[in-house]
Image (cartoon, rainbow, N blue to C red; front, side, top):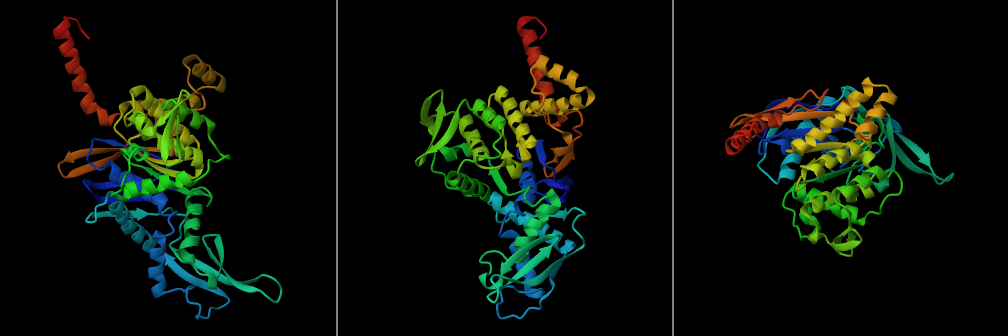
Length: 429
């Protein structure tokens, strides 16, 4: 993945921060200081290439001022040439503004404002030209005129009179071209999903979404309900892990969701809250190819026992190994500790021979194939400096994610517990 860089001048309480989009991103820090804002911002840079509406507004505005208007069937076009030229700078400026509009929608906050600056990868030239040419296609003496529109080595053919109801050909071909340039292949990204906090209520209650975040989630769930289970590219290990963590599986039965466990079937409303929180993720991996997905996951540890929080980290790591792009917010040291275990296993794997590594894994019952390569992961710690100022720190993860989030709170409670135990029992803890 080619890096997209973002400079945040102002985003909620966050000031003067830099972020680079990577396949797996973990955000930690206290509650209420902007982790969700930043995660949504990062998710935007996957979603924008998939949405048939967002980039279309950029191109339709440009088309009013310059370029060929393929909607105008009365306009006479030359046989070939440059249909439109855009600049990287203009595109970056538009993305910077539209990302803030997207966050505002997701938060349900019409008055939300922020200042960010987007820097696209160097694979995008300073000037981006859309080449076009007419082509005759069809049966001899009854050919139809088609147009081939090419940008950044990706071409799209369309017939003018068919037109586009919702999206201009410029936006359509550019989205795929952008995916190709950033991810190396325009097939590499074709799905996005958001998992907001308290998502489990969707399975058992009549939920009315009031924010874009939940609207997007509900729309995603409705699409999953209509989709068939995939037969190719199913990650059976991931599927088994999800069945293990919820001790069964959740399925749609008629108009309702049911929970199946130990040969017993019950309404999802009767299942534990942890089951309902995880179920949307289980449904997603059964119906979507995760290698082409971007998933925003808020608090994957929600309502889980510490042992299962660690198992959730294994699930996240397995998704990453499967090629999924993820933006994750967390408050769990258990979750982060397990992520660290998998990062360190990857380090151990590089330091030992294959035989030695496999012996260690066998002795301590580690899965030798389940590790996290630090090259795909970036960890960011949000720290509150004043009542109106939060910084974002990129953490060094070579030997695991530093526990900046928990150092301030773990020390004193542990010391207090030891003191009370000594005072009560007369023994040192």
